[in-house]
Image (cartoon, rainbow, N blue to C red; front, side, top):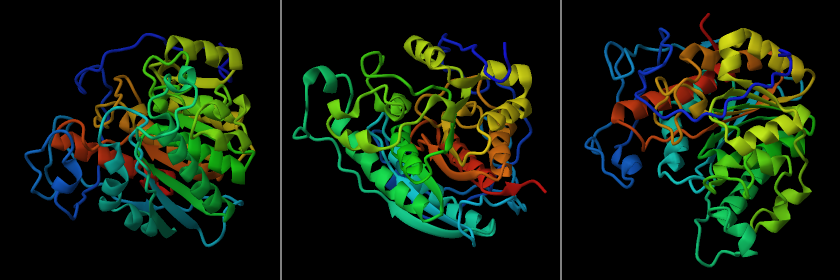
Length: 395
């Protein structure tokens, strides 16, 4: 095995198990948050929660749930090099992308709102950023009147037109903010929005390297996809393994920059479809599975990642399911054996310390899944990872 370009990938799908099973537990600190409005407004999904009339409050001294004790997490501003391609003083544009039609489970559309309530803007302000919250994109839901195109294509993708047009909106907003020299933080929403965010970043910064943190490769094409869910296809669109001109709603992508194999690194893979495995090998994409994390350690994995993408602006597309479900259980496609609390943080800490991180996605936080306690823990984890990516350190 050449450590600079590993080829080993797993194809065996592991069943989702108890978050305590097969997980490497680290001592961790979490943040105390107080969400300001009744949870009924967020959690009235297909099922009603018994706490729908209560406010969510995490307490400093207890809050012990199924995943261990939770204590206060403190945010400290560190003096980290600011990317030269971003404006001074440092400005962060927050874009909410509450997309949910790229996958079948309701709730991902509440992720942006919940992270805001948890204190997203306040934390970034404490880290020295001038925060511009651009609000949420209003996506048009799928409809029977949506253009259908050729059945042999569209029938392979669920909600093709609605997701495609939604990603176009993401692309337009991200590219505008990136071109203005701002750090672009896009909060999802399911990972189908990655097609829009990465396309938008490449439009403004064509040489960008992409770090895709995920349990899954998201490089399925419609003809080999086992589910037809578009959140498993954004990388295939970006690399033009899918011809966007054949799919209604995606035509806009034909004129955007193409993501090249040498611009992409995966971290945290552990649930890769058989067809995806072939694609990754044939295209020579650099991948670090959880086996590589175990073998080399997360420090060496990040060194190799940053060496491979040296000299480029960086974009990190972070799917919360890259983290082990012991620490982020409320997500739609959780797979055990993922990044530990500290490994998950070190990924973004290392990228930010490179001085080249200019944009970030935080996706697949789904407060509508799992227990009430699990939902809170996942929101905390998403917020903490964003803060670490944007300058928060222990000392």
